[in-house]
Image 1 (cartoon, helix red, strand yellow):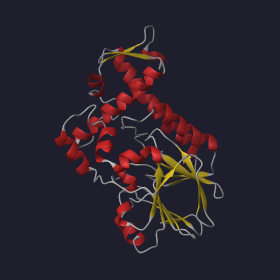
Image 2 (image 1 turned 135 degrees about the vertical axis):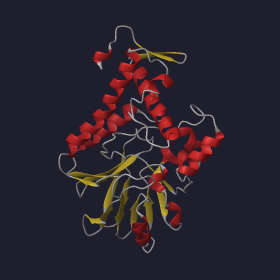
Image 3 (image 1 turned 180 degrees about the vertical axis):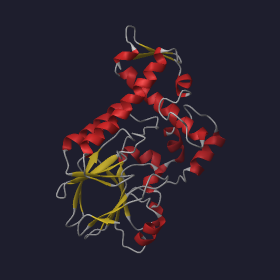
Image 4 (image 1 turned 90 degrees about the horizontal axis):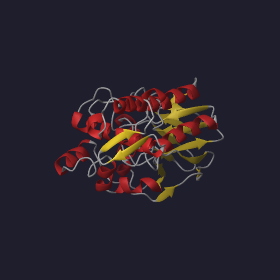
Length: 301
């Protein structure tokens, strides 16, 4: 646990290991826990504390895994993620089941593998919502793209933003939900840069990031464009269906295990790119085929 001030602590989970994340523990007039998927040792400590309020950054299970262990806590989450946090069917749908995979056996395997469970939500977050904990005040910053309801939290008197899954991982941004938006994701990353906080606290990885965080955020964002360039190169060379493009792994480059799940993630992220390219007028869709607009060349991307 890393102490920021008398009231605010970062509960860091070292590395990237699903289904865990960095959390924040605020001891104040109202004790508040931001996200609930720490290491078991930290969880054991938290369970000895009075947790009045849980604020979840978004509706992915690795950020609200242990909500159920705090039944007396009030829970807040952005309303746009309500469905995936309260319905296994909606969660599976968001991850590409039904549209890309219509196999109930694989769906059950997936939900079991990610330890899916629902959570109660007592109050919904939205852009700009002020949460007053006593001496500590934080403000909701809606940062969609990773999920529709993905939110960060600005601590204006302390000069930092908790950016949740805008996390500076070396893999880059993750957007393997059918309802992810590259326009929103890029805008959210740019927004954090433009807000110019003194530093950021990320939901995975190193946690507190002070040195050159804006440059690192720009590099992290630009991984999206590098992936898009690979996808466009493939289209230019005759790979014109979702499956044909995804089988070349332009996002993951090499699939981790279990491959059946990560290939689904690959497909979804390629699909998110294709929809973005259609939205920006660079690609047209004809049935199951995706084609560069006439006159566009791969070198332009």
